[in-house]
Length: 471
Ligand SMILES: *Cc1c(COP(=O)(O)O)cnc(C)c1O
Image 1 (cartoon, rainbow, N blue to C red):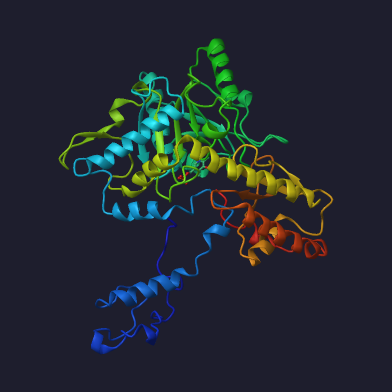
Image 2 (cartoon, rainbow, N blue to C red; image 1 turned 90 degrees about the vertical axis):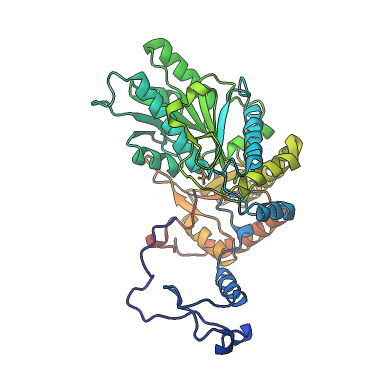
């Protein structure tokens, strides 16, 4: 959540919400004597239809999710999924005694993911649902940290400071983990045309205080897969040389639900013995509305037992590992519904369609002649591109701003350490962004090109940089 701080304009005279006389209920006879205030609780209740209309109308100003090419998060589900979610909106995930069947569906999802990610023994794989990949990454990071501490029980908590090795392209949740749990974030910078972690650089940064290495299946910056198998091989070699045995966590927030269906030959999951845990976002390419992620550990030894709590005061005795206590059950049910509904072949064709749209659109944007592609939707159905060096009349921020005038949200942002000189646009193709919509985007971009090329120079000032949300 954004950290809100009081009303937006403190001190300004209070402006009540505007009630349209058409709502018909803003009169004393119906119990509503005045329009409700905006920033404090009103004195009394107002009729439900008026309250509904007021909230509904304000939300009209939110963007159109289908035109949002910035987010990875699901913006469309079938009506049947919506019905199931509404039916389950009163179920509290933690209350496994009251809702044993919701817990059962959660367990089945974990088993399905264990099999999908080639766990050596799906029966003993441990896993749980979370609110998203961020929570899943916190849990996985905590397990790594505790394992390291136990290995070093004679030195910890003395002077040793644990560290976690990762690429500078990690999603912000890993910076949060390191900040909140006091772990040093050892980030490998980008180098030239390498925009994510390399195996050698990862192994080089490891020492006896390294709790693990994070590899990403599907970098948020450009949609590329990190070379997980190479990273594991480099760590195997490190172990040969030095005895250091560093576990790997794979952050497969997006790729965990893409690679198993489209890239079966890419070995990135529990097939690699060094991979201790994996997370994914059910609400990204898992195709469920926001609010669900998954974390799995190869075997019980990867998740120290003392981190697991047994909740018995709601009546049951179920081991749990979570940051939250109460949490909605609807998203977990929707995940199970989607697994059941699509099966492997269904997921494969949905993800293949997204990849086809991404590849086709990337190719046609490249053909406009002004852009250099960093990626082309070959891994995640995502691609990033920048302007060619000879393009001086406009920059990526201008493109993003002009597309916004047509309703499209295509974020532009600067790359991190060592490639701050590089600014890109990124397009995330998701289920629901059809080839028809891609055609419309391309049409809008093509018709903007003459105006962009005629600019005297880039027009978007620094204050407007990093347009839109891109994580
Ligand atoms: C989106 C993302 C996250 C965070 O996931 P949420 O489900 O939004 O919490 C973490 N890592 C990667 C690689 C991501 O793409």
